[in-house]
Image 1 (cartoon, helix red, strand yellow):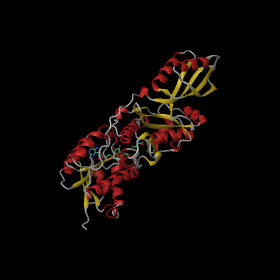
Image 2 (cartoon, rainbow, N blue to C red):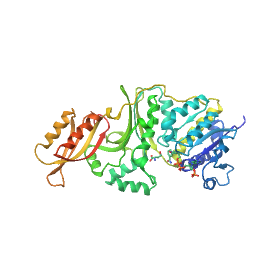
Image 3 (tube, protein in one colour):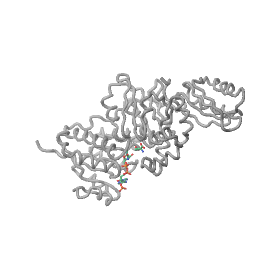
Image 4 (spheres, rainbow, N blue to C red):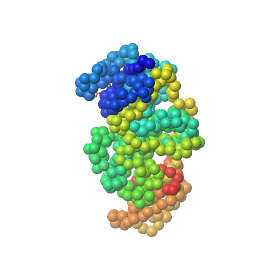
Length: 435
Ligand code: NAP
Ligand code: HSE
């Protein structure tokens, strides 16, 4: 049988592009056996061609800074987009799909906003659009959700899907560091970018949760539907109290399919130290799901980095190659066939942790409990310690489940009471009970 070579183009040769180039080379000798064909990167698009040439050496690969050189090549089977950002990636992918060329991308920014539109174009043109690397880097989660778990009704997807913030929180938890020091360390070690805003403010994780929720619940959820909160206000003291109460603090992406709609948010949360997600440390990622048939399942691994991310991209490339070889591209397109409303964040329910500085005199706790009772808020744990400030006490409460909007209103009312000097932190608590 003739050895079929599927020609591919790589858009971008940065961290992930370089990894993809390396992994495909590492697999060169086994591709034929694995796929019944081989995949060869023939063209690379970058802005700085010299920088890319330094990485490919003597390899006979065309390097260009003009997309026209890629899209006008008549024999291309796959385009691998690893440039990032919305434009020009959206335009390039659209053009490729309209020509029936299958696309593999790692682009969460794009898929979290325009995934529905691009998947429809892919289906209309009988092409594949795969994006495994856009969520949790090297961890297989998108194909498992779309394929292996598709015989479930999934009710919950909870993830630690940002490695930078997980590294920072781990250092705060294990070494008692404050946020700024842990962030500096993350930058020094190359985990955090020079501008870490998207990571530490929860935006990167919110994009990933939009993608996961859409696939898990078969209903489109976009980036603006996911409420994002970051970890910049978490202090070493909060972590100390959490530990004392039997919890870790993690930046969690939560997506739930409830009777009255989908809940989707990212925020730092206390999570019982008995939950498997609490043990996911350093820059590792994990995604925990619950389905009506499979029950609980967790996926764990490297959420970023050159080779781990390239592993996911190359796995998608292999799948496209198999589909091209068997004439089966376009088999799995958009899986969002429902239209479930996304709930307003204030209508979501959680338990809460709050640390406050209050006057240290009789009747203060009673006054606080009266305010909370007015909103039907029940306390499940309470710690009071002497404060370093004279005549003040530090009070930490953990509540039972309460509507977000009601808890906010209760805290606003508490903040007005003269006995409450400062509300230092408000952090949500994941799960119903510590068990
Ligand atoms: P990167 O290191 O910044 O590399 C980007 C590459 O794209 C560079 O080669 C750059 O070329 C090229 N590029 C950017 N804009 C271009 C344009 N307009 N025209 C032509 N070339 C352009 O980015 P990365 O970290 O590899 O990330 C790539 C994608 O993977 C992003 O969508 C990211 O979210 C996703 N991702 C990354 C990771 C990770 O660990 N890094 C993990 C999961 C997903 P020049 O160098 O010549 O400018
Ligand atoms: N910045 C991301 C993280 C990796 O820290 O997990 C790319 O998705």
